[in-house]
Each structure stands twice: as structure tokens, then as C-alpha cells.
Image (cartoon, rainbow, N blue to C red):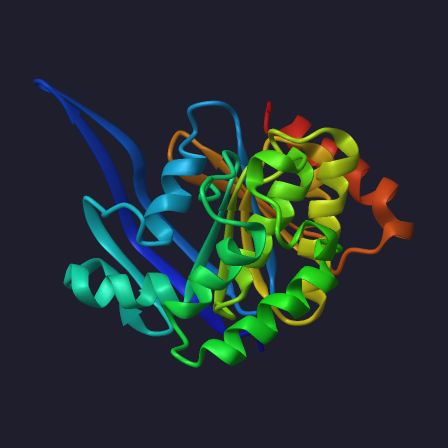
Length: 252
């Protein structure tokens, strides 16, 4: 039986502008399982990114609860939530957000120092990640000196150096060309094969094919899900067809 690592219960998220309140997430219930690669899809305005930010504690819920490893993060003080953001979750964004004035190596190690005070250990792990993600040649370069695809791989290394319980991705391949996007997806699949829990929002069918489980949102609610099992490149076409048929049924 799978372990629930993240749980949303009657989750609501509203935004107030003047006298108008916009309900984006509406009494949503969702379990995220340890070791799964969960992809969230839905048409524009369905609440995908809002859900991702609320599940991760990057944004506060209006009502309802989000529990991470059994701890209700919606009722936590900011100081406690900050610790969880550093240690237990990581985020990879579409806009890559590397620090421009420090090197690739320093961008990765900087995040590690926030969790592990043993600098030698962090430096060693940073070098290992550079090698694993084919970034060794870029070690001493600045973000502006490398391609967008390489920058996103640096962002991936930065996200996983803390060994997070959950890795969140908000359209992490959205700004990349197909080759660079495929490289990032390969990294995510490899991490998931090693046990990393991944939750990713995407609008791209090829990216969605990496999911072991696909959640479809409509008007702020879960409107269905599709179980795909473990990804393999041999099964890619069949998986894409299943997803296309599922999304077509949903009117995507």
C-alpha cells in the first residue's frame, strides 16, 4: 500500500480584488503518494499553478488543510514553514531564477549550505551533481554564460541538493526547446526511478507522459485522474495516446 506523503483536505484558495472574490481552488481533496510522479493538468484558468503553490506552502490556503508527512502546514507559523521549505520541499520554476552574480557551482552549493553546515560535504555533493547532470564544464561560469537548457539543469541540481521529500515543478520545460526540455524530463524521470516524489504542472502532453499518475483539474476541482505506471521510453507513444484520449474526454 502506498504511503500518503501530502494530503489536501477541503482545500480552498480565493483571491480578493477590491470587492470581488475569485474562488480558484474549491473544496479540493487530493492525496499525493510517496515515490509517485504526479502530473497536474487542466485547461487555462483551472487552478493548476495555484494548487501547486498552495500544496507546497509557497502560498497560504484560504481554508481547508494541507498536511506534509502528517504535519498541517496550513496552521504553521512562518518560521516553522520556512524550515520545511528549506529541508522537505524544493521547487523548479519555468522562469529559472538562478542568482546571476554567482557561478553555477555557487548557485548549487548556496542552497545546500542553508540545510547542511558541513561545507565540505555540500561542496562534494555539488560537484557530484554537476557531473551527474553533465554540467562540470560549466562549474565556474555564470548563468548568463550558459544556455537556457543548462541553466534549468543547474536549477534542478539546486533543487535536489537538499534531498527534498517532494520536488515540485511548475512548467519546468515551458521555456525550453524540445531537446533541452527532453533532457530535463529525463532527469526528473531518473530521480523518480530512484524514489524521488515529483509533483509537476504542465500543459505539454510529452511532459505529462512521464507521470505515473495524472490529475485533471477543472474549475478548481479534481475532475478525474489517470494511472499510467512507471515511465519507459518504449511505452512513450502508448502513454501519449492514453493521455490524449483522456484529455479529449475531459474537453481539454
